[in-house]
Image 1 (tube, protein in one colour):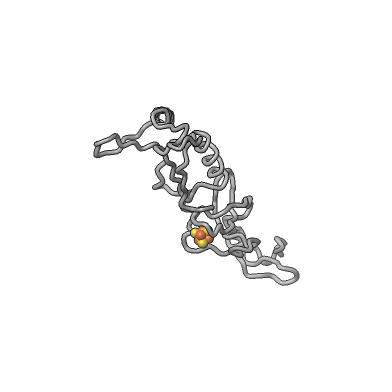
Image 2 (cartoon, rainbow, N blue to C red):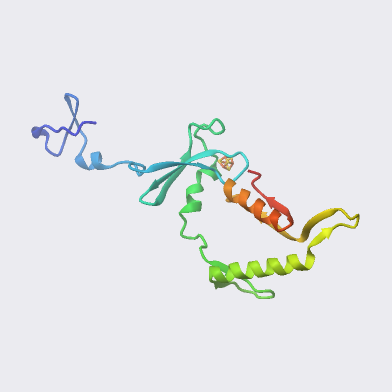
Length: 182
Ligand code: SF4
């Protein structure tokens, strides 16, 4: 739309080509929240269908997530769950701190992330050291522990799942599962 406005129309009309249009300046100034946003390729994290998404980012913030029309899988569409992916990212109810419930405790405590990482590392090492099997009862080399497992959630992306598989297999952990199957 042209911004050219004849003087006789003042605040009441905008010019499109040769014809004045009855749009108020306030209406013309309104625009989609996506204007000026950068579209980043994404994949819906919720299930194994793997629908492609466009994640719109503006000023360092995710402002919207929609289906990617270029995808042969979903052709721009998302199911009701995938269509609400934006709420996964921007949600005031999302827990963003470490919550710890001690054994036999009836309540959660907020803990620093460094404390949680150190505790997980210590418990993983203690358990692995105590249960690691070099050879099975037939003498075959197995080098694993069945005392530790890892269960991933669907919101983990491909790259995270790849690194998880690499890390835990390296530790000899073989019980690695993920709900999403991506
Ligand atoms: S949009 Fe729906 S069908 Fe597609 S990947 Fe996400 S949850 Fe699965």
